[in-house]
Image (tube, rainbow, N blue to C red; front, top):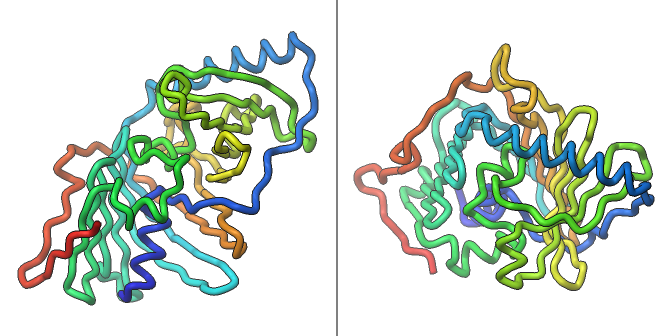
Length: 279
């Protein structure tokens, strides 16, 4: 795997899997009556609260595709995650052999390129990592981005409006901690009150510039008989930057009742591999 692939995968997967925005705009909405707003907020908060009882781990097969004006490619493999921030991606070659590993605990990351016999590691705050992970993405919440949920934190909701295409309601909100710290970030979440899932999640900076635009589709239970409020997205699309790039993750074959310890997200270097610190 060459350095270009490393940058693509690190930028997308470390995400999680989120690339910086630039061409997206804030959603167009229609006003709701006050009673409808109150009902929508109550249902949304109830749904978010019930999801706190969902399993804390996931394990699935994944196909990652990147399409842009300058590069196209697909890689398949496995993704495992544990709340709130642990994540590991194993990429396979066409013969089904591991060709790369990417793991993060929300503070550190390690990327192993098998064909290069090298491993890269550093802090998620390192410039090389932050270059691809926009300000609106917090690696400490990686699991929730992948699961199509919000982190189980206190929320401050600023407005509620109707989606003009009838897909649900848009809520403008922020994590209470972000508000108290004066970060000025606003999240715009498209919530389907019928299916009780998040269909889209945008993060905007104080000037209203979209930094992250993630769309979720094909929700399904991770296991037969799984809780309806714990469904996971089968397709995640990340619309990114001014070259029109679209990253798509297709997930399936979920391992039922997945359970991991923190040690499961450690990737050791094979003998003879060179470790390269990333600044």
